[in-house]
Length: 446
Ligand SMILES: [Zn+2]
Image (tube, rainbow, N blue to C red; front, side, top):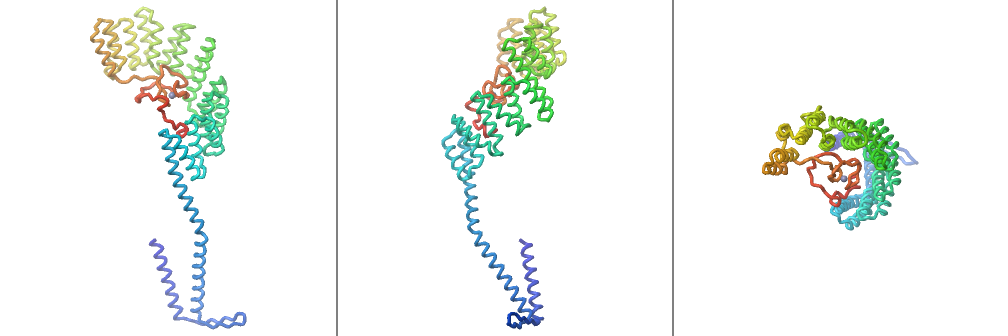
């Protein structure tokens, strides 16, 4: 603004100086044109030309503004529509989150008109149809979304979920392959593809997807090892179900070799090995995994393998299990459990005291109660330990990172939400939410 004022003052100054100079030096101009003769001063000629140019400019600006007026009016109207459309859209999303689906549908239709059918209203309409149980209508909206590059990926996700809900795994795979072609590095797409290939028994394609993803660096080396192990594991479980234990053992061996720290594989593999081969080999599998990932279920399995052995030999075996990580909490608890079984009360107490010196552990308290009862029959002390156990730190468990569902054991699919590879061993600090209480905006948040 200051620059503009300074510029105007400078121009006016120049004009005034020029006018003063011209007044002092009027000069003469003579023009002969089409038989007319005009005699005037040079100053007057300059004044006449300047006046004509300025008048021309003013007329031009006035005409331009007059012509633009309708355009401005329509632009203002479009802006008002857009603002109103966005407000209505926000209300529609709010209505979905509080399960007012009819209201959300009305608002979505209005937003669609105001915003001239943008992709987001299609997405909301698809989501609403799905929530209202009209999968057919949802499919129509999702297919419409496929035409728009901005919503193509979300549409493919929705169509995959839709096909899976109707147990049409071939259609789900066709959509997943299309999604992979457009987004080969997307983790969700990769896991869905591996999941569907495995489900349909197309193991080789599942493994190839992992290898390709590792080569293209869409998977880290650890991720590739894990998914490769999962595919071998699932293949082994399928064979076990069909009664082919020998082939199952081979696949479990491959899964274990790929990912030694994978507890569910080690447990299943060791159990089958103990049943169909030898306990020694089963114990070796558990020891290998324990070294990487000590886990109570592994300790339980290991102890159960040798519980009929003599005390000294049995304790030596338990000590062999924890050889590489004896001060790990799970190692101390495993030795304590083994010592109780061998009636070595002092050794059990020592191990549990070490665990309890670090944290108020529920399992350690329960084992202390067992010692009190078995060693001296002291029921009062045992009861006190059990009360202490109820106030101890929460224990970890297998739970789904997608819906929070807690399962008794690991599985590749969550029992509650069906998601792939979301179950892990961890302490759940939030209460378990049932299916109906989970976020309903699955498509929107996808
Ligand atoms: Zn789940």
